[in-house]
Length: 168
Image (cartoon, rainbow, N blue to C red; front, side, top):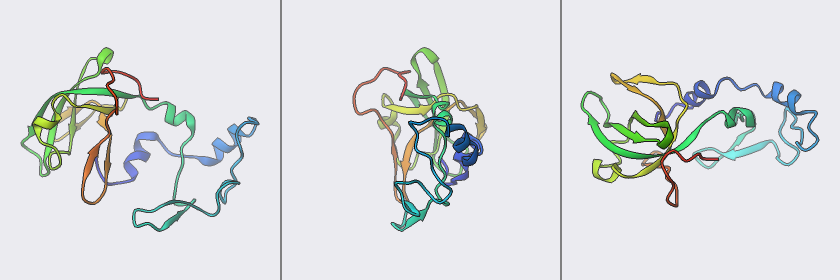
């Protein structure tokens, strides 16, 4: 998972807040949001990584329809093979996604996880991401992880869930 915030934009498509406002204006249950922020928020939104508050203009939101288009699933890691031909430590992971079958993904988590602790672990993946070749291997999905400047932490279900279970 890269640190470039534009990766999410390329996955989710361009965000056009004005179209969403027009689309939702007929729904009385949804509060309208002005260009300067919502009626419940001031000119500021969430915090930046350094703790400072970012402006609403810096924090882009997506519509519920765009979020709903992302198919998040539980996957069980069946194998974690170190990828030898990359400059940063990566794994070629073989995953069980239940009814969706087996998948291979490439993940840059080798500096944070050993092979033994990955095998058998259940993680959350984006199952409907278009496949792409990473370091010569076709990667058919993307795992979810939290990342800061010091660590990467896989997003995992807190209770047992079957491979292929949908995340809502």
